[in-house]
Image (cartoon, rainbow, N blue to C red; front, side, top):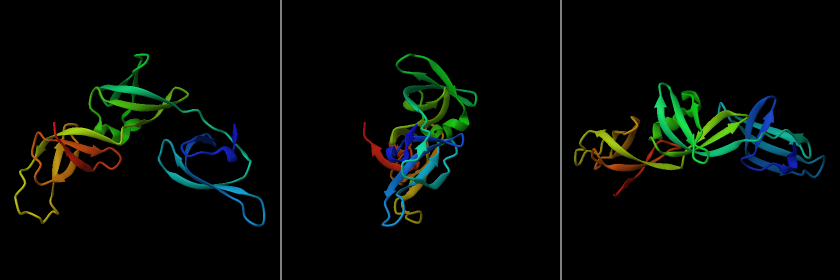
Length: 187
């Protein structure tokens, strides 16, 4: 248990049986009346955001989220298998829980797995990953009708937009949050 005065960004609250992460918070002390805390909360499982106001000093139930460094091993049917890098324990995570992170995961890649009471909540990848372009059409010099980009498929099977000069076999850095091309990686 904590009070609303203890809130911090990233803290996880248990409200009505659901887990919410504090995205933003602001302590407000109006000239008249009691102080209050205005928060922006994000549901850990669904990603839905909510604006909620608490009276200052009110007790809120905090949830303990255990973030562990794990390594992605392989895909088992629809599920993904991760290994704890400190204990070598393996866990299986469903496709729904992994979500869009599956577009950027290669076997042997490190990730952070967030758990609460033994249940996996979400997978956190680094901000960017390096992937190899496995297929792309040759870019036509002078073709600027598509703003200088073309579709390319990376080794995970995900399709991104890349500059026209990139060719098959090129390694690129991709933003895991937006799925956008960042830069070419020189070996």
